[in-house]
Amino acid sequence: MSTKIHNGYRLAAGTNLFDFTRRVRTVIDPIRDDLDAALLAKLFASAVDTCWLKGEGIPPTLSLIAFSRWEDGQAKLKDESREKDPHRFEMCLGEDPGTGRILIRLHADQQVMVDAFEAMDDVERYSYWDNDDEPKGVSPEQWFERRAAWDRVMPDYSAPAESMLTFTLRSRSNPRTMMLCALDGGESDPVLAKVPGRVERAMNVARTRYLHLLVNTHEVDALAAYRHGLTGRVTDELAAIAALVEPHLWKIDRELLVNGDLEGTSDPAVAAAVDAACATLFEAEKAGLPVPGKA
Image 1 (cartoon, helix red, strand yellow):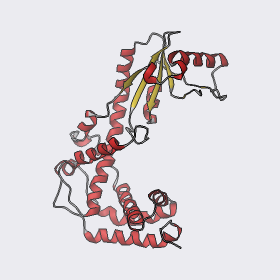
Image 2: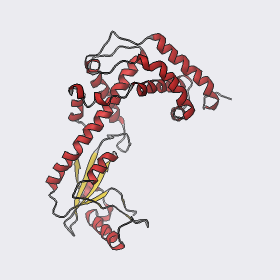
Image 3: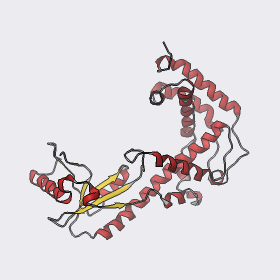
Image 4: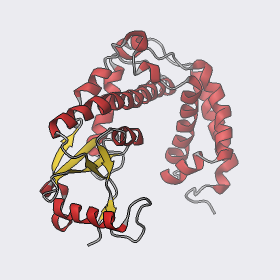
């Protein structure tokens, strides 16, 4: 059986495991909070701008509504999906009975978390794979020692759940992230500080409206439409459409996200101009799109 442990690490001899996990939380928790704040900021901006696009007011507690919708979407994803729990940080820890050293398999998709973990004083990269491309700076003897160590920790390359302990930074139900939705950080609130700028928001509105036209009206395959929307030529045209939107977008603050504003709605004339511009762009681009029924 092929062995590929690209996420392997080893702790310094004599490391106290409980003290180490406490220090991991001290290092990684603030990074996780920062990543969560950025994610929530994008969710909230998208929710506000969707209401604008539809000509609807902002309901109270939109921040919690948007987060709950995101959690519902997460629950429907398969565990192996790369979009599932994007800010997870898990360690599988096993003791090498031959040396007493602790070996770790790290599961984290955000490079900033991995970099911070690797920078900890008692952490050493200790991956192993049975290909011929051994890493630079590791002697054949050291490479053999790694293989033997991982064989002892994970006999017959057994699943980590069968031979190691698991440390999880946060559970799937994450109270700390929910607390961020309250937006109680004042002027320096970590979520509000990361709300995308108006130009980026306007570009997202333009692209969303154009892709909606392609997929829902003209039945273009969703993936093909998405790729089409990222091409340089189309992006330039969408920037012009975004310029119609940007001056009219609502300011996003705690008052709007928590208390809502059911009275304020977008100008129908602006939305109509956006739709007309998207339709014009489609007519210019449809020859290169996989539109059903096209000769």
